Length: 63
Image (cartoon, rainbow, N blue to C red):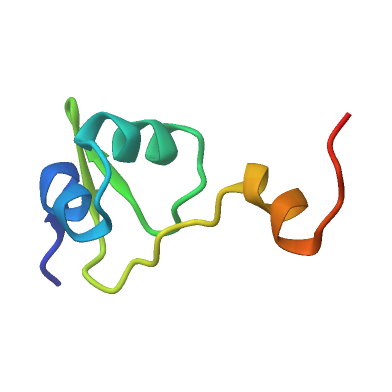
């Protein structure tokens, strides 16, 4: 199976490679593999949702 780098995924998702690496380190992306200092992601990986957006989407006011 061929994997994608954080830079490749960042371009697909429109975010920085550093943010992709943080999501990998937090365990929010399934199927990632770390080899040395480099994260590798499966080619069919989906961008995780941002939990901060849940309140805005359903109309609940934040305190």
